[in-house]
Length: 108
Image (cartoon, rainbow, N blue to C red; front, side, top):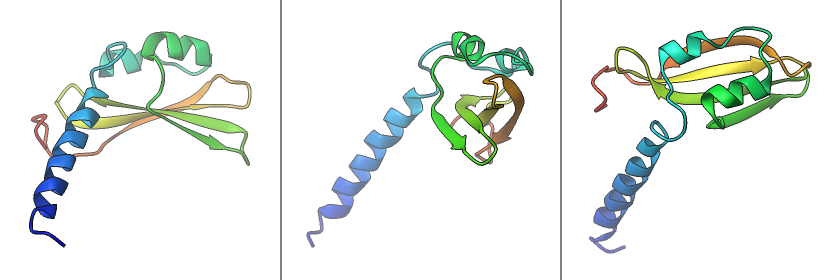
């Protein structure tokens, strides 16, 4: 293994991190204020119109539900996931947000 491998690996990580950061700024604005407008009973089309395509989709076949996850920065600058769960009827059943970093300064 060459001594240059770690440098190449580090460069690839920097590029990947930069591309990942783009996910927070593409499409409609994502903020706590926008997510507050998502309420039970809204359709998938309603949510898609407000937030755009989700970053991740997780089906739950046994309960006939599906969760759409969106990455965003909350009001205090923390990186968060907002997960919106749709019931068997395709309407919002629940939502929750979780922080995924320990600092609120957009650099961690």
